[in-house]
Length: 506
Ligand code: BES
Ligand code: ZN
Ligand code: ZN
Image (cartoon, rainbow, N blue to C red):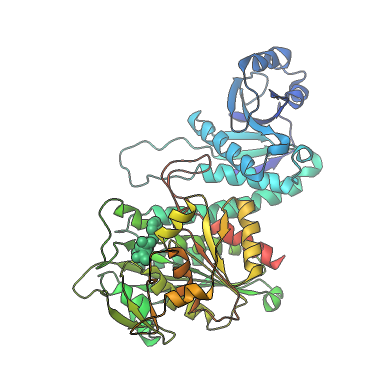
């Protein structure tokens, strides 16, 4: 939807639905601000306030209560409970905004007005409030189901107007601009994850990345099989050799604008892009295998982060690198006991063809490290072990850099894409030393699977380069709709990494 900021008052502004956030105070809805706003309005005033008081609506977080109000042009007010001001966090704002936006959709309201909550009560500035509100709304209204035929498209809210007096407008507009970029990056990532694997093949992912890059002003290079052969990328080629869909390496670049470009830090984001993970010869069980269309969630996240960085013209020199392949069983597929030679020159015994993510990432991390970036961050749906350890609401974070751990933890707290710091130590590195080759793609036991996977990756990153690995196998997919999104791909990581970039350059 298109968002604007308006100075006009609630009574005068035309629209279909007025969303009015309300705090809870002493276990009751705090209706004082509404009372002031409704003063002198037809159909507003005491009658309406009594009705609300009698309704049982307390302003509790995430509760909604629509009331007809002929005195405002919109005709309806949708009261949206924010909970107690001292407990309202950034994510509460996103969730309440998301739920209100979805209610607006059910009410077929096309023009939505939002009375912006006052920053004093919340302790956040207006820019942050607008950013969370608009981001929450845009994330919530993300569409899925484009592949369904014969169904009428729902009426979607098209216009959002934030109402706020005088001097607040500038900060609110800045917040809206940022929110639109963040939501676009996340929704782009979600869309990629949701696409079926017969459509989103490695080549198709490359084509979509190129289109995104063109639209957003990044440069784009796609390496094909011959070009990867020249670089001896045995990891990506090995994983891809069992599929008739050829692998690719996607390499996007965004340069900080103007003079800032020379001084700006260089950051490489690397994302696992397995468009379907059948397990290969070490075939996965049938139940739930469909979820493995989402095994390119890391790729989606770094592409989304690249989109956000470019839209916000962040002062970074960014590289977005995606090794993409389809992992399939075949007569020519890589098999357990095969030894492959990676781009870095290291030899790896493939003990399990289902541990393919680390093989494609290893070549991409080496490729990212060639021009010595200041930071490397990778995101990958890498291990089931990480899901067992942390569940679906946290990503695992393993890193050789305190700076990156701090930045990603802070970013995750703010975007609510939370990361949990896990160890990366020599003991785990020893676990993946090979018997017949330099390395093997499995630990010696099943214990600490997320950690041995990260340890494997560490062999392909220079010790001196600050690097963080984010295992998003848990949070990149949601089995149910939430306040801020449909079920399916969550886009986890796009906003997190974009926010981390902002923090790293601030
Ligand atoms: N893509 C999977 C990991 C995964 C699991 C992602 C669940 C999302 C949800 C990965 O390639 C894989 O299969 N990993 C194996 C590694 C094992 C063979 C060492 C796993 O986690 O079982
Ligand atoms: Zn696998
Ligand atoms: Zn995988």
